[in-house]
Structure formats: C-alpha cells, structure tokens
Length: 403
Image (cartoon, rainbow, N blue to C red; front, top):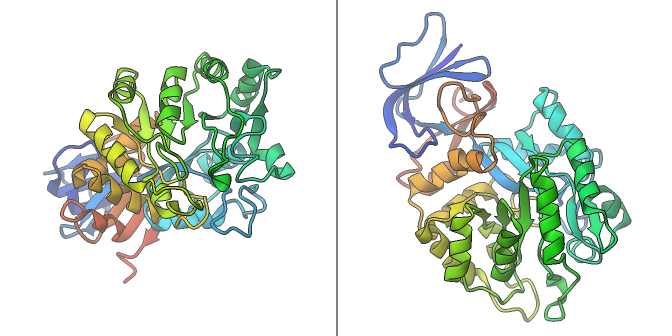
C-alpha cells in the first residue's frame, strides 16, 4: 500500500484544491483521497510537503503509428515502430497516462491495446478507433499519405457509392474498436488553393453514425472547418476533431454551430497545438490561428464541451509535451487554470466514456497519478513540472525520490 501525505490535491473533478490531503493507493486503485485521513500501518508513506498531486493527463487525439519526421511514412505498424515505444515513453514522461488513437494500423492498435490492458507493455492506457473511414480518393489516404498501398491496407477503409457501410462498421465492431473514426473533410492542404478532394456525403456520414450507434460505438469525426463541423454534428457525431485546420476559409463559429453543438451535447477536440504549429505551412494560404483561437473562445463562452487532444503523431508535434501546450492554449482561449486541468483529466475521461475507470483522484478509480513540483493553478505552465507519474499504481516516472 502506498500513501501520499501533505499533498496539494487537484482531483480532476473541478472542485477546489485540497491542501494537506492524503491519497491512499492499494494495488492499482485509489482507496481514499481527502483530508484528515490516517495512513494505514505498514504503508509506504511519501510526504509531498505541499506539492500538487493530480490525475494523470490524457491525450484524446493521437496517432500511435504517426511519424514526427517527414522522411518516414505517415502511418506505420506496431512492428515498424517497436510497439509504438517512442510515442508511449514520451507520453509517460510528460504525465500522460491515457491516449485515444484517432486512426492507426488495424488490427495492430487493437492488439496493442489489449496487451497494454493485460500489463504487457509500458504504456499509457489505450482507447482505439482502428482505421480511418474516408471517401475513396479523399483525405487522408490520397492527400497526406500519397496513396501509399501499405497505409491503404492497414489504416484506411475507403467508401464509395457501392460500399456496404453497415457491414464495414460491423467488421470494426467485431474487431473490438472503442470508437469509429470518420473523415468529414474535403481538403487537401498540400495543394491549396486547388484543394478539393472527394468527401463523404451527408447520407454516408449518417449511415456510418447510425451503424456505429446501433452497436454501442461512439463516433469521432474529422472536420477541417466550421462547415465540416456543422455537417458532423448534423450527421450524429459524438466528438468533432479539430475545428479549423490550415488552408481553410470557413472560419466563423456561428450561432447556429454553437446551438447545434450544445443542443446535441457534442464534444469538440480543437487540436489547437497542431493548427498553430503548422499555420503558414501551406503556400499562399491565409493564416488561420487567430480564427481558431476566436472560435474556441466562442465555444468556451457558450458552454460547448471541450476535449483536450493534440493530433500527436503528425510531423514536428512534440509527443507528450504537446498536451501541456494544448492546455496552455485553452487558458489563452478563456479557461481558468483549474478548468484547463479539469479538462485534460476528468472531463477528457468523461468524453472518452471512461470516467468510471480513470480521470479523477477519487476512491475506486485507477491510480493514474501525476505529482508536480509547482502549482499549475498559479501558472498553467507548471503542468510541465513532472516529478512522478503512476500508471495503475506503479511508479513509471520518478524524479521525486531518485534525487
């Protein structure tokens, strides 16, 4: 049994922090958390002396087989990437203890998830959607993946007018995916301004979501701009991924879009870090970062549910660290530090339909924990000050006791 005492507890529920708190961990599970709790006899006790303790962070939009470098393929198998070791280790080192794959080689990512759950790999916990469902000739296979036949076989389900959509979704359900990933965009950012590519129709989008929902599977839908976002919500998406990507022009977050998001209780994962990093990379395209910041600010003010994910796995985005950049950008868009910390912990777990498992430092939840050296409520950048990380009660990163 492991006990942290004198913690500055930020529990991920959104409640005010508790000073002088005690957290008791029994095996893989949080047994107790709060003030005036007596540690059990014979427990290992760590005195945090006022240091912050909070849930491990989660990245709700990542690509395990993605490449940070342009000279590598844009999506690779678990074997090519040594079981995604670089990605997983970077995530843990930055306090990320859960990640949702937003499109990867299949069944690789499903097999890897199951092995992670069985304790066979050093990794954050994994939620997986399997492959991308896209229009034939559309994004991403015929754009950023350059019609690579290996990626086409491993990461893509191409849909045209002859496709039996219900059957294709059924195959993924049978594989055991946690989510269905759908591409609602029609842009090839590499060929701006002649950038239109085939996209799924409104009917096809609705057929996909209906097929997923009748099997109990939620749908995450890629949107390049606000028009795509509206199409996604109308089609029944549970989460909208991105909001305004580079080389787009439909940027106004309208009252109609806000109403649709709120009325349908749809979450938005704006991946602000990715857009800001790549803004200006498309030749002749106007800058979009100011419009995205304005759109996210409007969503926050309206009460839209915001998820936190980076699009980590795309080129040049720093794995693990990017979740802290994303959290910082959310405070720039209007969240308080406490709201931002809650978003990347408890609220993300709620969006991922896993808040019965992780996301808060409360009794019965998995002991996925981060200990920090400084207070993120005073400066959100302090989420980067990682001293210790626990995953299922096991210490996986230690800069606290080893110095």
